[in-house]
Amino acid sequence: MSDFSDDQKTEITSSTDKNRAYSSVVRRTDLSKAHDAIYEARISLMKESIFIQKAIKDRILEEIDLYHGARVEKLIGLQENSRISEENANKVIANGLKNLNQIEGLLRDRLCRS
Image 1 (cartoon, one colour):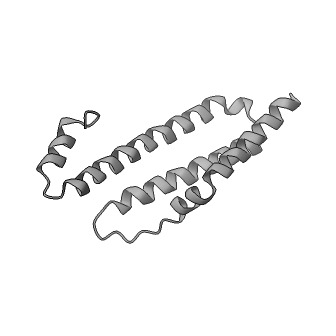
Image 2 (image 1 turned 135 degrees about the horizontal axis):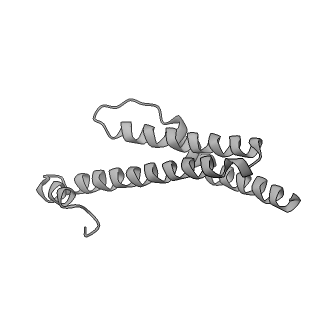
Image 3 (image 1 turned 90 degrees about the horizontal axis):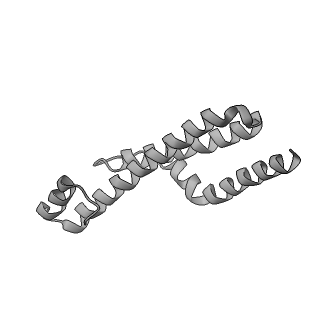
């Protein structure tokens, strides 16, 4: 538990259901990290977009938007009695790595032609 803040440690240790509290803290931490990564991806894309072909940039942005949607779904899903669809999250689980590999292939093809 050393990676947790004092408030998170207190939340876990004072809970009557420590497993549930621990899982909740880990999920919120992971979603926070996902938020930071999505933000950094958007900033990097904005900074480097002048060097990226529009079709490739649009494809990367589409994937970033998908990951953002999945994160929002999971964040809302943490709330009690939430009935939000997890369509984006399911797409990320099913196709995320394949989609990222496709983008990598597009970038490699473009770099090889340069």
